[in-house]
Image (cartoon, rainbow, N blue to C red):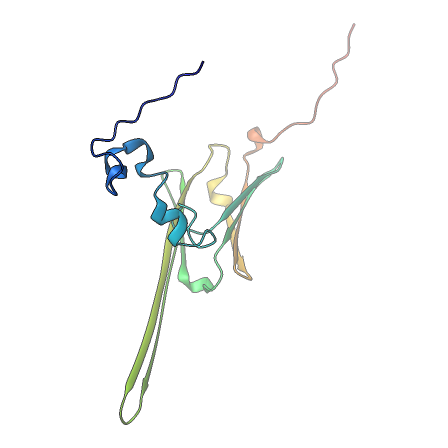
Length: 154
């Protein structure tokens, strides 16, 4: 025998039933799952993918941001946070005798990462190449992993 949570729906199976079932309201919206393709919308905000790798001496961060130029980025460190933002806009206008065509696009994002206390904030290095913004965060000497030390038994 198992217990199943009873879901009370005040108006039965009307189209508005999800508005009264707060457990499923945000997770199982049919219009989110079926109308927008998965590769475009995975229930996440539109921010670039991020990889973080820890080695003995550093943290390495890679942020996928294709289509941006180096000048589009602003990277700051404030209150122990690494703040990364980028903004880009493009416009194109074509005028002819009987028509005008104007197109524009705008793309922006912002990400903030809480830095561990073991990072030397003054030694953070960044590089942008082929659509990947890379960071190298050196660890403080006291935070580096020491090799095992063999203890002699007397």
